[in-house]
Image (cartoon, rainbow, N blue to C red; front, side, top):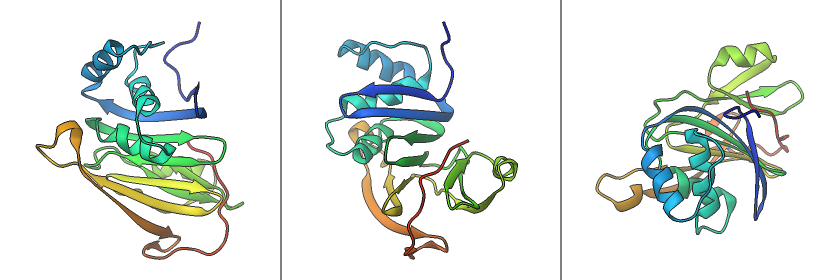
Length: 185
């Protein structure tokens, strides 16, 4: 039986989600113990599965807010990409320890990679770096950027949330054309 490979694809009450994770969550053992105490059952020993359980058990209503809620509990260096039927979501740790870049293929598809050389291999051009603490959402409405800030001394990571529109030129502009949901590498 294959275990501990990525991307993980799981189903939960709101549909299916695929996740690919690059990094190291230093508090995953404590989070896993808390989740198991509350009834979660784990299939493997990776820190990526902890993030999925945090999303599934979040009380937030939307998938994006569930991701942000989960990320506020994570500690460590990570770049993570989630794929649902209608969204591609990329997340970078709030301190920017783990690299993440956004690119575009010639067909317009948005792609994400931890290194720009991976974009070269698939003939994609670099659009920009994903900022520390940023959540980039790609869907039929285009590309949107959400972010949060971890604040010291706030239970559960706490933090503030905000929203910025992201376009091809960077923060502050929104491109009018429709963007295609792309792949991640």
